Image (tube, rainbow, N blue to C red; front, side, top):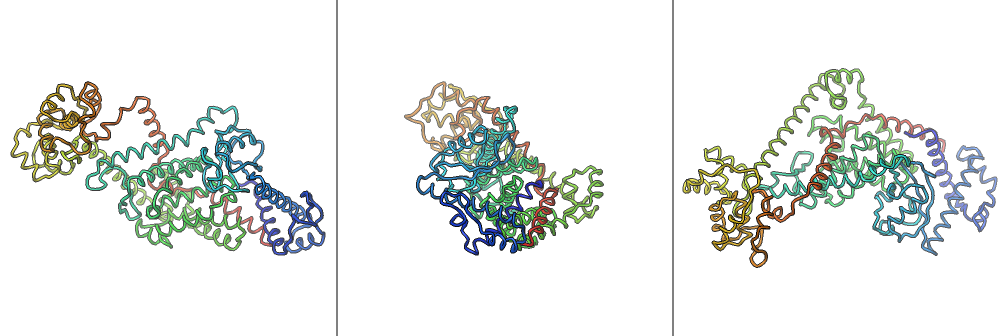
Length: 633
């Protein structure tokens, strides 16, 4: 929340803005004579000029004189900075510190060349503000400044504004500092692990997107996304979730860093992908909200641009009057909370740009949505006494316009939908586990679970069904014929989910028949170590299994071959066969990264809509008061 001092600062900004407009209109150049001397010191501001602006702006002469001197000093410093940059290449950057910490000052100017790397710039900041470089996160033009890239290559120019997030609180909390510094890095590692896991699951796709991440638009239509874009989108959405969780904890500095990381990943996706889902729109909204809570809206050059993108994407997803949302979901009450924040932020940006009429209009829209979303506290309490959570109760009442009985029905319906989703996800995980268990066909495709189930339901044994589908490359008619022609398949054991150790003796049996050692090893793995099945598979495929080139002339069979294969499962792909086993330390780090990511994931899909709107209400009142206090300008 803004304190009284901050509101006074905003009022001063507004006074100076109107005074600057008047000076520009009258072509008064305060940095030139007679107002300034050649050395930049004050000379003389005519009394009649002060009196003129005092009457025009309805301010006291003392206020006008003081603010004219502030504007003069600012103009002189800016001119000196520009000359210095032109002659020496030394730029002046305007620094604003945000976040907690024992800071020497909250804002200052810093001179530096723009050719220095980001990490050298952080060292200069460290010397100025008294915090370690590792605990400073500088942000300019809406991006975190990278350590290994020159400032000039990061779109930073002379007189640019830089927001610096301070991630520490005091020297006594050194351990907590280190934890804060590594949090964003760990969040990215966890998001990338998730993306890599889903990418691996994509290798098990059966006719499209049966397994792994499926992304749909507002209508539930699955979007076909190339692998690299899907990976970027997965990382972005995971980081976005972490950022939203930090935002709910009101850790705005940490949230901003996570959200900007997510934004960087979203930028790797095509615009049509971003327009098909509302995640990116909400990300833009959350980033600007962080800047407001960090009291740095005026230092965000692309705030207006982000909010325009957000509004355009909202209209595309929800309809210009939320009519599309009502058609898809049956109501629009919950999503209106996002529009409260959107119009509030637009109003704040317009206010700081001096676009008063637009600011008034946007704040009025925010107020209108806010009134529609007021929740009856007695009904909220009553729902919570029934055992519903506060979030469920609030979202239910908003969706049903404070109708208690309708809200109960709505909440229970949502709970049932979540149970069904969970049940479906469990079934998908079971199917995926089964698919890995079934292995691959002779041509390298995964055995199709639905065809396997069909054969088992016809009465064929599980082991025989797998073997027949592997031999016939998922042709169910041929598989039935194979099972009828080869009765020995009916006696095969069920698929074994555990790893099979391929011994040198097994391998030698196939190699002695003239088969390639690597192909023999893969065939034995696929056939659960059964030599005759492996021989049949190699004969049908001409001795070469798809996916891996022949190993002849490269590596010979040895005990190391059988040792490396002992850790592989029958369903492993060729890429996983070649990958070294992960150490216990690596597995533990992955486990911790997943757990940390999971702890920040929302309990349900509408968690992002559960805004109490208390902060929005306070900001709305403050900016309306600021507008009212400057109406005389």
